[in-house]
Amino acid sequence: MTSYFDLTGKVALITGGSRGLGYQMAKAFAAHGADLFITSRKLETCDKVAAEIRAMGRKAATHACNVANWQELDGLVDAAYAAFGKVDILVNNAGSSPLAPSSLETSEQLFDRIVALNFKAPFRLMSLVGSRMAAGEGGSIINVSSAGALRPRPQIAPYAGAKSALNALTEAFAFEYAPKVRVNTISPGRFLTDVSKAWPEEHKANPTAALKRSGQPEEIVTAALYLASGRSSFTTGSLVRVDGGIA
Image (tube, rainbow, N blue to C red; front, side, top):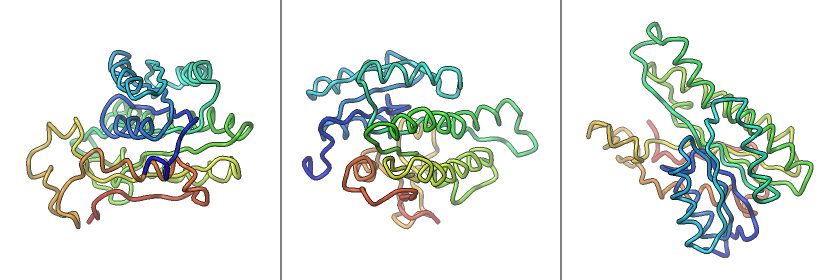
């Protein structure tokens, strides 16, 4: 399997890479030969992941960044290129889905925060990194969306809208930076990440899914490896569902 999804010599930048699905992707990419640039808001958590990556024999660098802040993203990308000289794989994984009591009671502050993290940040990062990829040796961009974009519900309306917009960006950027850069979306369903510890048990069970359960975080990695590697060389502008069969 390691040779099948070979990422030897590649550099991956993962936002929100210190926990959850991003953490699982980081470990999987390293296991298949990639070096990692990990970013999240807390540098100490990024550094812990970087230590694990280095223990696997790969290089790792970190940078603290709130990707929802547009003005911080140039510095993030510059730091990644300063550390490794290139980025071959960009994973826009950082996201948040806070619930709102109702659409009427959704504040402007909450709305703007959700859109900034789930839509604005990937747009800017794809612009910054994708343009460099297109001018160089190419690369792969993976946007982590949500089943909520495909099955929106009232309590997550701004989040579902932002992730739907992210799905549209995937196709737009796939055309803008073609043919050297491939841009695809992973659409996860309900996963038992750190956030799920606060969920009620009936929510964790996910009985309406076809597989009648929520996903384990490590179940995201094969889709991510496929899209990151050369094995998906004829796949761009696509959406890959990893959701257990959403209802």
